[in-house]
Length: 216
Image (cartoon, rainbow, N blue to C red; front, top):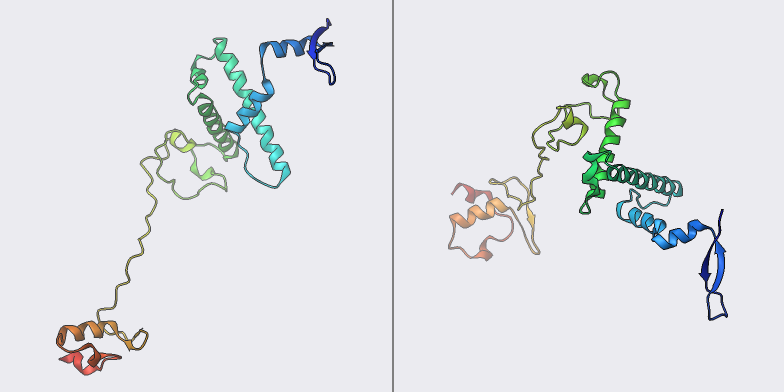
C-alpha cells in the first residue's frame, strides 16, 4: 500500500515536520468526514439512554445508539441511490431524523407484541400476561399496534379528580364542636342563633349554645 505524508508539529521546532501516514488518514482529513464527532453529536441529540448508576445499562444504551445511527446511515444511502423513495421523509432536515427513530421504535414494538402473542392476533384471548386483560382504552393516534388493528377508537379522557374546595359545615347540629382560642361552639347552632337573634350582642352567646333556642 502506498504511503502518504502529512505535517506534524513537534515540540521545540517552529516548522512542521513531514512524516509518513496511511492514505486513509489523509483522505479522512482532506474530505472532513468527522465521523466520530458526528456520531457523538447524533447520540447527544437522539440518545435512548437514561441516567443510572448501573454501568451495564449504560453500555447497553450506548450499543442501541450506535445501532440506530448505523441503521439511519443505511436508510440514507438507500434513498440517495434511489432504491427507497418512501423513505425520503427521513432525510428532511426539519425532524427527519427524529421521525425515523420514532417509526423505528413503533415497528420494533409491533414486532415484539406479535412475537409474544399466543396464537392468532385476531384472538384477544392470546394476549401476553404483561398486557392489559380488560377492554382496551380508547386511542386515536393511528400509530400504535392497537389502532392499526382497529381495536381502539375515540379519545381517552382520564378521570378528573375533584378539586379540593371549602369544607361545607353540617346543616344541623352533629355534636361536633369547633375549637377557637377561648371558646368552643357548634357551627350550625351558631349560624341559626344569629339568624334567630340578630340584635343580641356577641358576648351573650359565646361558648356552647343551649338547645332550647333551637326551638324558638
